[in-house]
Amino acid sequence: MKRMKAAVVITLLAGSSVGFLPRQTASDRPITDLVPADNLVVYVAKPYVGVIATSQSADSDDSAEHPPLSISTVLAFLNASGLIPDEGQVFADIAGALPLLGQFEHALILLDASSRVVRQPNREGEDEAHISLRLKHLQAAVVLRTQDRSRVVLEQLSRIVSRYTNEKIAELTTQKVVGYDFQRLADERLPGWAVWEWGRLGDFFVISFGKDAFEKIAETYAGRTPALSKDAWFRAATAKTNGDVAIAQWFLGFARLQRRLGEVAKVRSQRVIAALGANDMTNDLWTIGMEGRALSWYRCFRRNGEDIVHRYSDPMRYEPRHLGIVPTQARHFAVINVPTRWLVDNLPRAWLAAQSQRNVHKWQQIWQSLEENTGIDLGGNLINHLGEHLILFDFPPHPLDIPFALTIAIEIDDQRPVKNAVDALLSAWGKYLDERAERSGTKLARVKVKHHKADDIWYLQAGILGPALKVTRRYVVISWSPQALRDALQSIEPLNPAEGAPKPVHPSE
Image (cartoon, rainbow, N blue to C red; front, side):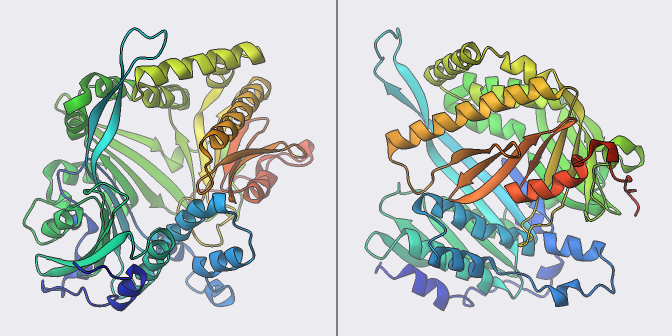
């Protein structure tokens, strides 16, 4: 087909994909009606702006006094001012898309994934050829309940497409499935299956990656293939985890994940599943709900034919010592009782289990060298001093209402060894990222680790300032930017220790 200017076509077709299926009941349909029941992983959440609105006073006129900022306006200003260098452009574009998740109910879906084996000649000192895995095929999608506001999404698509491709290397075509028009963008620099597709399905807007991913969503919406909303186990697990008040859920189909990923990498996938403690687990559902200002946190998973339910956050059992660090201005908060030590120890193990033997050996050498050079038992100094509680709250509020731009405080019992381990790890990570970027000549997606010694705050810089961390007397505190962390620390780490912590908030307030 004829090549066309992508940005122009996206704008022109903003309202054309109306389709022919009945739309009169579309707004009443759950978003999981568009999620295929055989998905691998899915995350579903309500619009963050709507959640905030329902929890604020009905007579509040804050929105009138403080109209919402436009991420497009902010990024355009930063670009024009030269405040976003080349190395931060990719991250700035990702940040530009995040507010869409705050405005609309959404589902992020991993539909399918497969890999292929690549054998490389052995290097000097290696007995066997190096075997690694490469992505063979991927299908993923984002579903947004935009109703009549899809132009906001299309404008964001237009900016991204025009920045990273053009009519010389890309082809944009209009396709049709179950009576709905959608667009497909193919870039000659990518393999044939790696296409972007997008379009409207009733009151929903779908952006997908991977050939035929949009078709899967559309056929599920049309009822031609089973939807997650109709799946018996998902419905039962949702009921067991207070899904009727859920503001966010994520589901993992472990059985399908292991089957798909294990077709060419059975041993490696089994190692990952074991590191996650998911042996014999088939399905796993996590649910976040809202009880007043407090957030509830449930989990239901199926193992060996039995459903097991855990509640990790019970507002009626929050301890005053943890509630005392929650700022009174926080709109939502939670005290979560989780096996923090297990998470910090096993998640990296799972990541390492997914690597090739060559990479495993490389990281083992890096870790051993780091411990020898610092004289610190990094694992023991960090993991052994983590507590069982994690406190999170949405203060300070993000100016663009990006969902889950939170402050997180992880309980510790001894500041000194944790600080020594964190300083050594982040310093080494920063050095590694700098050296890797120099070797590869990376500019568009370069990450730097920075340390502000005046107040002992570590943070990431990816063109724009990113998450920040500090080890305090009782907590490792993480927030969405260095200044956000400083604001949050005023309630966590009083300037005068004799002042103590603020009066605890109450979940029902």
